[in-house]
Image: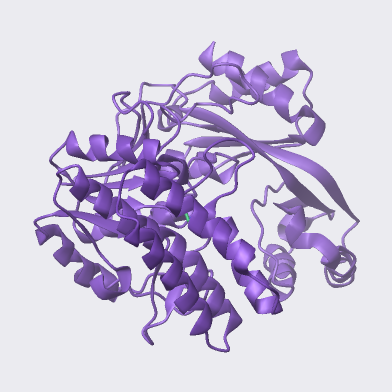
Length: 448
Ligand code: ASP
């Protein structure tokens, strides 16, 4: 049994919806279909979720919202017409939206979630009708009624553990289940949404709940690329990677999945396949619990900017018991999370996202200076992290040499190197200005 999720661009128009129906119909094991709200049809278009946010904001401002409402209804009306579905479906969507607006309570965040959730909810209803019209027995399932219970952190909700057992019953549904992504219901019965892009989370939860053989995630790329195509022309495709590799790559800028989105699938060891709605016979990229990598191979190279480093020097630091703890304690007190802490005999650096430090920089430096009495302290901004990732690097001598040689030849100065004990990734910090050059140099060294 497969749980299949289609993102916004895959359900943005009647043409795309027809494709997803054919994809599901082509494989009898595709039993549960998770759908997003209609996304962008072309560049410059607006996602229905964004139209709904504008609508909700207009309502909250007390302004005239008819035009904003018409923009949302218009998107469904176009789909209804092009799929030749009954007009009543559009009238029902309009009534649903007006109902959500008129029956809103005082909690603005909850109202915003109710409006955002309508994007996937109404799309799932339309898509279930479209399946039926094409002769495939299908059923819209309401997440709240099916047992998708979420915490009441509106806009940032998390699944509650009891959901999995309840949702498991979906595997016995005789018809194709069309399940709206992105939202669920709190214990008090209110609609709550995951963070943006949260339909991926819904898919991963359902795949785990029904113990699917595969979680297929359809998007608009044939496969995940080993490097950012905006930096490297025609990068190689990744056929297969492990959860760990995917997490390391996602950490530094790999955008296909939000790594947190797939936690439920990872926890339950459900393989994930990323595929293209516009080219469904392409094999896609598999993300699996384990694989046997080629010795010395690298799966991908990613990079992300927006980092900074706090450098601290103190003679005899290695003998000073508790130095590291006190340093990190100061960051904890200031609610700052850090990324890496490379250290030497008489120095320790902390790499963090610049946004974490933000306006607290002066006060943090003041505390570090006062409480740790360092010989020198400096903060360097404008750093990028470049990650080389691959299970195949484990136990292979010469991987770092290959990378640093590539940097040397390209004239990229290394600010820092860090290799975790797992040996499945190497992290290099470089200046922002060197980031693309660094990725290209590594790409040439590891992929030719
Ligand atoms: N429609 C929601 C968003 O745009 C959720 C999703 O598509 O996954 O964020």
